[in-house]
Amino acid sequence: MFGRMTVDAMLTMGAGCEPLAAVKALMAVAEKTTIVKWIEFPDSVLLLVMIPGDPNSGTVYVLDRKPGVWYWIDFEDSQYGGYSLQELERLVGECNLLSLVERPALLRSGLKWVIERGEAPTATA
Image (cartoon, rainbow, N blue to C red; front, side):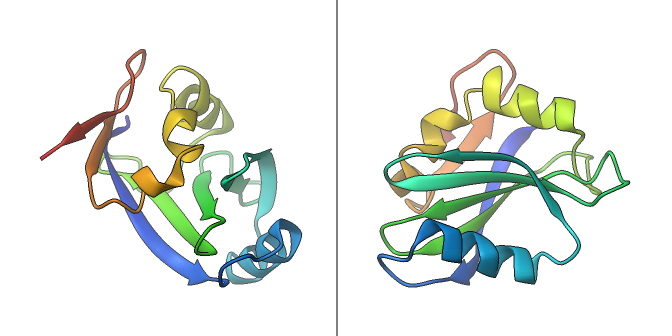
């Protein structure tokens, strides 16, 4: 679980977008999902969303406020259908994902990141 992280731009809102409007736009695209965690930083917003009734459908989205772009965060692991709420909480807490989320320029930098339990995110070549 977790490992090499992929970051894919999925929705462009435009620079200076209002966070609430950006969240509403994302939720319109990510149909039939519910927000299970919402964390705001000065430069970003982290959303953990799930499909109601599917406990293993969790997905991670990050809004980079400066350019107004939503990114879908995923991992090259065997969790193809998504993650449980416990796994998402572990990703945020034990894997220190927030250290990247609060500095979203790192997500758009083109660097490849590896996320492992109990370790700081590391960039790879």
